Image (cartoon, rainbow, N blue to C red; front, top):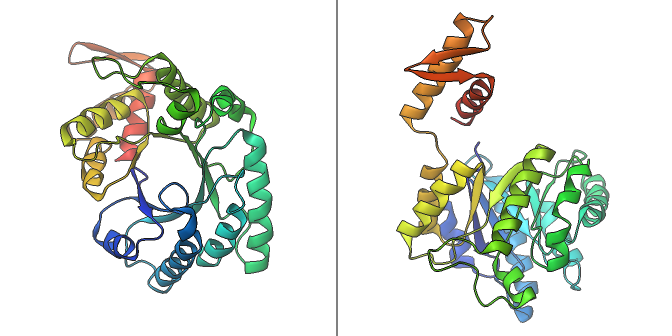
Length: 292
């Protein structure tokens, strides 16, 4: 199952949790953090618990992975979030405002204890940290390269919290491109994820009504090397899935490259339609066919 679209759904909205079953997203993230006011945290935990339990009983009826975004470690809520969610066997935990690999280790230790108590397989619950939501967190992104925790599924970043943290009056310039700070954070997230060998998940497009802007952003995201993208509205999912799905023409070209090298195994470089093709092209072609 692919990991292209990652849709946040407010954990305190029974209506939206029910509706998500009709959305062809790859991942549903039940959000117990930013989407839920403090007074609704417990109600959101109870809804998330029941929603996860329902999907255990109807395993295979939906085509998405089930994740939970807990509250940050600097709040009093995150352990209660885990206690409510873990009996429902979420595929993974999104960790907001992660300040570095030490918090991955801390969360992993909590998950290990819970998996043992619940009789789950060791390391069966993955972790996706949001690595950029404070200035300190953003500066620690390269440190994930040395983290060997097997639960680390990928890295993702967010612009909204970082903007607030540093008092930025803008995130994009007049042409719509990320300004230097956010472009640096995005590039570090992408490169570190690939260096670590995990998924690189791009941030969300906050204007959910801007379908054209999202399509441009998602297409550029995949072209830059990201493997998926966050979403905040069901209407964004199909656009993201399309952008991150190789086209027939791309698959055909990739297959030609693979076939050409298979027919000439002794060559390091060859020509296809007047273009010089070498080993990096072969690696890219195999990766694309794997995605398809």
